[in-house]
Length: 385
Image 1 (cartoon, rainbow, N blue to C red):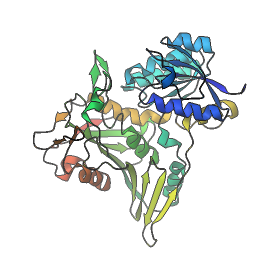
Image 2 (image 1 turned 45 degrees about the vertical axis):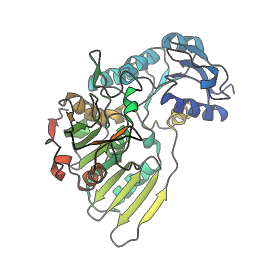
Image 3 (image 1 turned 90 degrees about the vertical axis):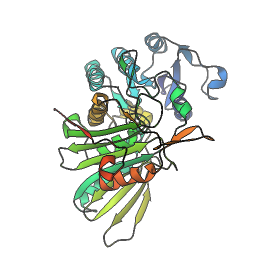
Image 4 (image 1 turned 120 degrees about the vertical axis):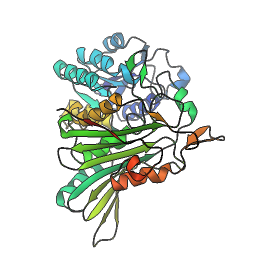
C-alpha cells in the first residue's frame, strides 16, 4: 500500500459521496489512499463507506493538506469555492481533480487555470464523459469520413428534478449568492456534460475555438437560474453546436450527443458509453466502450506520464458558454399554463419539452426557431478571442 497516492476529498456529501465510493474502489486496487476529508461538519462513521479506515477530518482545507501530506486533492464543493480551493492546493504542490463546472465565470476560471500552471501542478477537470473511450473512437469515425462532411453537433438532455432539488443547498438554482456568481443552471451544472461532450467531439475545446454563442434561458421552477434552456455555439471549425436541456421532462431519458454528417449520424449516449453509427448504405452499428476514471488517469499521469484527459485548456470553450450564460439576462419565467406540477413527484413538467429538446439536437435549432410559443428569440454574444 505504500505506493498508494494520498488523497484529500473536499466536499464528501451530495455528489461527493460518488467520489468517496470511487476513492474506496481505487483504494482497494492500491492506487490511492484516502488521507483526509474536508467538510464543515465531519462525516459520521455511518457516512463513511466501509473500508476507508479513519481519514483525518477538518474544515480547514489548507491545514488538512499540510497535515496529511496529500499529493492529490479532489474538490467537490459549491461552484463559487472551486477557484480558491484549487489555488490553495496548487500553492502547496498538491495536484487537483476539480469537479465541473470548474468555475462560475471565465475570469475565475482563468485565475484558477493560470494559478495552477504557475504553481507547476496538474489539474484534471471532472468531465467524466470525456474519459470515455467512445470519444476518440467517434473522433476517428468523423476523421475517416464515415458520415461524410460534418454539418454540426447536437446535444439533448431531458431530465427531471423535484422542487426539493433546489432546496438541497443555499446556492442551488441560484445565479448569484451574496453578490458572488454561482450560475447553477441546467446547461452549466446538471447537464454540463452534454455541452462539454458536444464541444469536445467537434474539437471545440479551447476558448479561441468559439466565435459566437446564442442562448435561450428559461425556467418553470421558482428559481433564479434556468431549468429549460438551449445554446448554439458557432465555432472556428465552421460547424454549429446546439445543446438543449431541461430538468422538467415529462418522461426523463438518457442524455445524448449526436454528430450530423451529410451522409449519416453518430449518436453517443455519454452516461452509458454507447454509440450508434447510422450511415447511408449500411445497417445501424452499435458499440459500447470502456471508460477511464479521471482520478485514476490523474494518478497514472503523475506516476507514468500518461496523457491527462481533461486539462483546463480543454475546458476553455465550455467556460465561454458558462460566461455567455452568466452575462445573459436572467432566465424568463415560463408563463402559467405552459408547465404543470406533478403532485405525486412534486416536480414541474413542461408538456412537449421532451420532443422539443430532441428536435433542437436533430435540427441544430433553438426553441424559438422550432415554434415554441414561450421561447424568446436568442440573445447572441459574439466571443472575443
